[in-house]
Image (tube, rainbow, N blue to C red; front, top):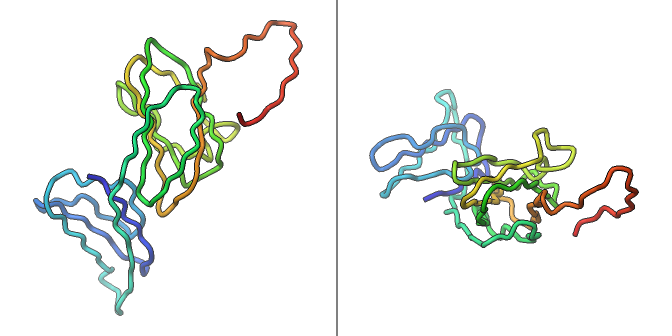
Length: 193
């Protein structure tokens, strides 16, 4: 099971510790948001909120613990997706299969730093938690071409912290692009289709 720990408010120097049913730390760190915190074992977990030893007064804190819900939808490469993260902790998964190999680019329609995507295929994740705000265009510091090998793929859309709201994207197949001839003259309009 995966959960979101949403740190609503806390005094400085507070620590969160999450201990599994066998006494092993699953997480220990600052009192801050934890997205997709995995609870790998069945049973009762213990959540410990600790203050720094030199804190001389009471310290107020508030948090939310929300199970992550996954919504899985079949996806067709080239199709535009307009969807919404409807509740905190929601992740949306889009699944598709590739025959042979394909080269695609991720085309993002929102400049959202709170929303990211992960792309996983037959050999594991090839893109992990890439923010929408830097997922394409001039803000992307990596090669925009994504090489897909044969097999089943999952594109997971996830939001950070308490974000809820709309997002939109598509994967564009480079093989479907227009072939340009040397010496040709082209007059087009750039838009969001």
